[in-house]
Image 1 (cartoon, rainbow, N blue to C red):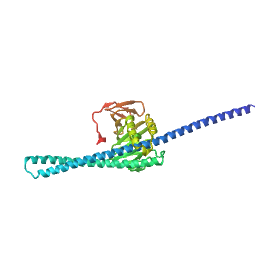
Image 2: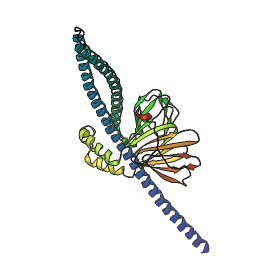
Image 3: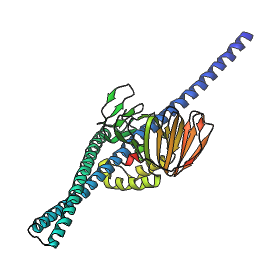
Length: 352
């Protein structure tokens, strides 16, 4: 009887363990499905937002090209008028004619130089438009094929000059012509500069020469990039600015992407708690909407310069966090965060 009672207790205990295991398994399964669903939705949102940002870049390029064409036309008109005055003045010998000729020659030189610069700038914008067109076509194809593509796009290169490469997670080196960046990718610049869109198009990152930026795996709530070496300039739009811009472009292109106002409202809500971090070998930098420069100056230190807004900087071991405001900078080392200092001089390399 004692043996039978013991068997019953063991059987009851085993059934209880089985029931608990099934409950845990179901909880894990549904949690996994929820995470997968969130991740799928995140990928869809990201592709649509990048698509819209590409539209903005294309529109900007088209507007700038038109504006430059107008300026070039004015330059040409000035050149023609100056040549006419020079031609007429050369047929006379009086002082007024000589003075008019001198003024016309100065105007001619200025107009010719302005035209040359405008033509150079136009070529740059035409190249930007070509690259935006290429990105636009690829994203449109991805959206039409499968919103939940296995490609987890987390950024794309909108422009570059000089020697720039994308190094994939498997070590392959690819051309930046495609421009799409996935978790584990690195952007490497030799003597060139690269512009990369991240954080659903809210963040524009300019990677300076001889730099390396590594893109870590992100989630629907956080995106992390690691500056291994070199320097970057980042401009992250505030949510208000981004919301205004997105609403305008959604209204303009809603027929193309079949996107509704409800989708945009939900998408913008999802960005409220999304954070962006830049890691360096010496610090963790958390930002939301601001403009700043980060430089890994050597193996010993990293420097943060805040141009607009505020940036949170934490030590690697997490024992110190400081807020750096606009107009100030801080240097971090492996030993910790230094004192916050007033900016006295800035090399605005990203605007050159």
